[in-house]
Image (cartoon, rainbow, N blue to C red):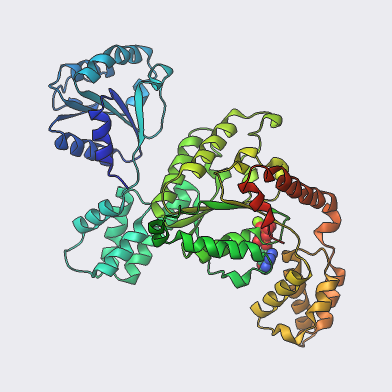
Length: 494
Ligand SMILES: Nc1ncnc2c1ncn2[C@@H]1O[C@H](COP(=O)(O)OP(=O)(O)O)[C@@H](O)[C@H]1O
Ligand SMILES: [Mg+2]
C-alpha cells in the first residue's frame, strides 16, 4: 500500500489546487500533509476557525480570510483546512475559492480540505482531487507499536501477530489497543494479540457493520455442492502470494444463488476456511441504513475490509440490501448509487479480498451484480439430489456423534425427496429428540418418522423454486454467448 503522504505529494506536485481528503483521522491527515510538505521542501499551514491559518496568519479566522491568507503565504504551500466542508455550504466561500483556483495551481499552492465525509459543491467537483486516507498500513502500525512499546521487549513473531490483529483499526484505535495489550501482556504474547483482535472485532462491528465470523467449517461440513467446493479449492491455490508471481490474478469472489436452506451461508464459511483467511460478514442493510452518510459508511467499511486482507468478505442475502435500486422498482436513487459504488468496489478492489455473496431471491437481484468482472463465478445452489441428501444426513449424524454406517441412509434419503439441507438437519435433530424422550438411543425408525411428518418448504414454494431453476438455466443459455459466463453454469452446483 502506498503511503498517503506520497500520494498527497504527487497530487500537489501535479498542480492540484484543491485536495479533498476524506477521513475520520484528522490528526493523521495533518501529519501526512506535514510529511508531504517536508518531502517537497514546501511550507505547511493548518487552518481552523478557532486558530486561523497557523503559523502564517492566525487572524485569518473566517473561511474567506483563510483562502486569501493562503494566497499571500510563501509558496510552495500546502494549507490544511479543518472542518472546511461546513464552509463549502456558503456560496461566497465557493466563489472565492473558484476565483483563487488558477493562482493556487500556478503558484504551487494546494488547499487540503480534511473532512469525515465527501460533500463537494457542484462548482468544485471537477476541480478538486478527492482522496480517501487509507487506514494505517503495516509499516505505520509497526512504527506506532514501536512508539508505545519498550524496544526489544517482544519477539518479531509476537509483534507481527499483534500487528496483523490491528489491521483495520484507525491510528487512534490501534494506539489504544496496543497500550491496553501492553498493560496486560507486556511481552506481547498470545494474550496481547487476542486483546487487540477483540478490540478490532468490537470496533468493526460497532462502527462499520463488519462482523468477524469465527469459522472452522471445513469443506466436509458441507454436503453436496461438489463443484463449488472443487472450484473453491482451485481458487484457494490462486489466492496464495506465490500465485501472483506465477502470473495469476487474485481470485475476486463468488456469488451463490439458490434455494433457501441449501447451504449457501454455510458455503461462505467453508470458502473462508478453504482460503485459510478470516471471514468478515458485511451487514450491508445496516451500513446503508442511515439516510445520512450511507455512502461514507460503505466506503469506510470496504476500506477496513481491505486493511484486514487477506480476508473473505461475505455479504449474505445481497439482494435485500439493494432492493429498490432497479428501474422497475421505484428507482430509489440512493440505493442505485450505493449499488454503483459497491459494484465498482467488487470490480476494482485491490489486494487479497475475496468476496462471497449469497442470494435467495433472484427477482430482486440487481443485474449489475451479474455483470462480468464483478464475481469470478456464479453458482446455482439447488435442492440436494439423493447422493447429496445421503451425505448431508451422514455429516449431521456424525456431527452429533452417531456413526452413519449404522443407518440405512440410502432408503432414508429416498424418503426425503425435495428436502433442503436445513430440513435434513432438522430430521436428524428431531429424531434425536424423539429417541431421547423415549430414553433410548437413536434408531432408523426415529429418522423415518420425523422425515415423514416434515413438510418441506418445497411443498409451499414449489412454483418459486421451479422458477429459480428456470432462471438459472435461462442465464446459462443467455450467458453462454458471452463466453466466461457459460462456465458459470456448466460448473454450477448440483
Ligand atoms: N449442503 C448442506 N450440507 C450440510 N448442512 C447443510 C447444507 N445445507 C444446509 N445445511 C444445514 O442447514 C443450515 C442452514 O443452511 P444455510 O447455509 O443457512 O442455507 P442458506 O444460506 O442456503 O439458506 C446450515 O447451517 C446447515 O446446518
Ligand atoms: Mg443463508
